Length: 455
Image 1 (cartoon, rainbow, N blue to C red):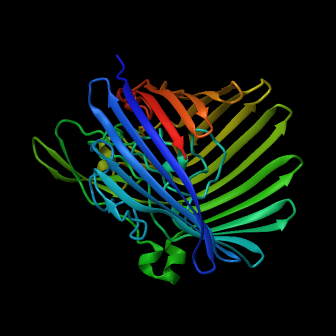
Image 2 (image 1 turned 120 degrees about the horizontal axis):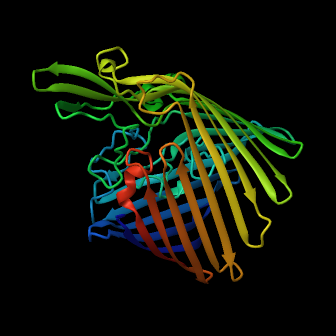
């Protein structure tokens, strides 16, 4: 029997224009107050969280704009938030100012916008979005992600902004170039082992038999550009390039990212063997990767065709043979990966949006000892329908992993009572093999109820 949970949210936002706070400085304040409450069917609370997100945007000079966004989160319970005050996935400069199981306070985004050298510059802590896929990340990996609630949070909220130098310049009327330098080596925030959305799939977490004692060591994390100084930061940080072109009705991009993969590789070493017990040390380590990608999209009447392709030079996968623990591979096998997604969007029915996607990932140097399959296929279906002059909206998203026969269905119905008052309810259902990426959370199904009120 499935376990269902309940979530109640209240969101309050206000926008307060302000004139110059300091001489020659003009800007606008806005803020967001959101509260969410989650309880499963066994009566166990998942969270009772309050979030306050203030924002200031304004002109420092005629050609220089500043945007600053903070975020404070407080949770009565401790079933989702990390327990450590200094999570290992953050760089020193991006670390939350305060963090505990019950509260978090951080500078969410902070960047300057200006024009210089015939181009547009955005310098500071920010989000950079690549790719167009729904529910699946193929090229959208410039920023790491928080998996405190797996993929149930909106990407806008779950992406972790990075300190970045972002330069975009127009080359012709139909083409442009984007250059990224990211000295901020912050990585994915994974749920801790005792939290509601901790990973348990064998593809991600090595499985230990009954006579194996596992000792988890500190993460082997690279120094970021801030630690090594400005000159060394160029080589130690991450780099990205995107070329965009509009030709023949097609929006095209070519992408390159030299970066660390945002999930650590769980290397394993046998350090002790007795007649009754084997001791294995696990060392999480971040590894470099080259990502080459491209996107293309075009509208043909009521149908839009979208595609993304990405080649990863190095991906790392758990091996399930005992010999790999005593070899140089240390329980991990490496392979290049080719992945792509094809999507079709249809808007030929009044007030209805339909979308379908097929995603495939193929390991080019697959080894039989890998827990992961050589080829993985995922399909997604999105249905969105607006009613009553867009005062009602129904949205259903299904993500289904074909080989594991597992997935998640997210359903949401929302109603705008007034222009600033929205009611909504939804249901998130995981299903399938408990060793699958989605099926591992089969016990975390939940109903969702909420209110959003803006003033």
